[in-house]
Length: 429
Ligand SMILES: [Mn+2]
Image (cartoon, rainbow, N blue to C red; front, side):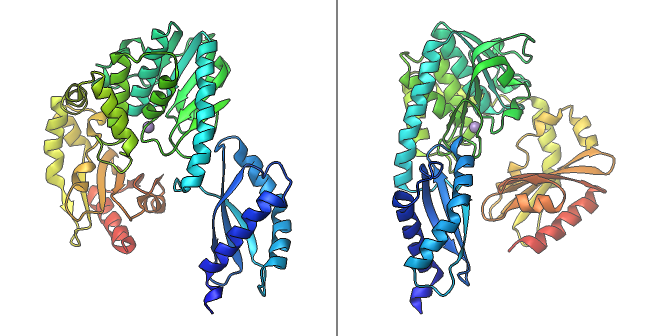
């Protein structure tokens, strides 16, 4: 009986397919594929075979096509080797998790080393550079952009740093912030364009590819797969970490100006080293940057303790709206247009308000209701763990990720809050 456990069968299939990949299959599209795991359906009728490729960007689509075409062959081989009454259907699925295991880490490290070298060569061999990141930029987007742009300038390169939304006010102390532009000159052409921390090329909101010979994507967001060179590492806690890796390989001594920018990027994307993304490398790089002269208090003081007075006034009006559910597992705050007006604050000052209900002991889902019109509310969801708020937001016509999502609803604040509470009571496991 035990030999038919799905786990056991999955393991055998994993082994067998890996062997076939190495010996039996000649399709070049499949050559770089590494099988990361196999899970079986309970009735053993379906085998989900997870795979990755050494280059997460370019080769994935080719690999998928290749795997599709060799699947019947693999199935026949399994039929001969494994004594099963029915040969399961084989379905290949791309493994987007980052827990590939040490073996694949090593493989990817090798490939990434080559990528860094290619990027270093592009820097050495070219003169003019565009550096751009995603719209509505966060600390990592700005820190990476300004860090790289400053470094390239110090190397004697021509550089245009650009962000369609500019540098947020709280970051306007970073070296080079006053040289960043919001509009790309129409006929501007660059040898190389760096697109940083973008996730998707469209998020730069400029036709980057038309303005350069070579497009280099440096990112840590999953599925970021564009660019002539795509340096993607989802294990990096910030794009600033990747910039640091590249600059360390250049023939260049990092300045304090660059170090400050990169430190801010890491600080920001790790939530001040509180999130689980704060890995040993984040601490190590930040430690080195501090060692080279960055003052942590200067950066965090500017970023977190230079708030506009009207933001504090607004927070004072929003916090009394706190509601904690009877079960204690979700909590919310709300803001009407009237309150916003009364405080003299702007929309952008509400950034981070949803973190206050999230910080309450026992709360798993935090909500922020923000009025955006007569009987119209935007809802921000934050989860601190198991609950998938992305799925919840989709039920309400919105979208987002497991831990952060948003939706919009019509109705009075009381109605909207009641509807969301109802949904949460249904959905919380
Ligand atoms: Mn980032």
